[in-house]
Image (cartoon, rainbow, N blue to C red; front, side, top):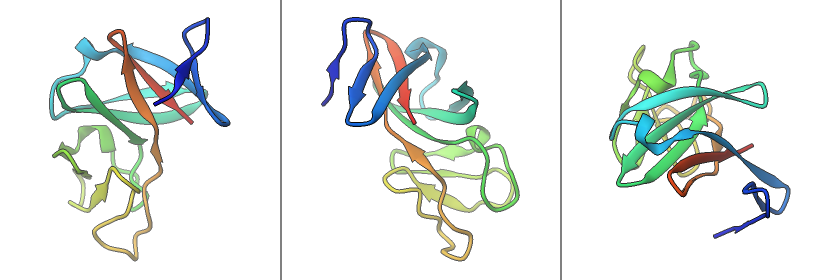
Length: 115
């Protein structure tokens, strides 16, 4: 895992974690979109206090990824049902390309995402 700095923002190499909201704002199996340093990020609560983060916009046709169906390993775009793996962003149709994924964690009830 990563070390937290004195101001509560953790770092991993060049990544800096930014708080986006409370874990209680996320419903299990659903997502929510946040703006992080000008980038639209979709954050999903996948189990307990486990979270995953991806780009909020589907690379296929711009669908709202945060509105997609989720299981522990992937999210499905609500527009055309392509799925993207949380592990690496790989799409179920390789010709579509991948969805950017971001490190995410929960610290003291606060969801943090790194770009």
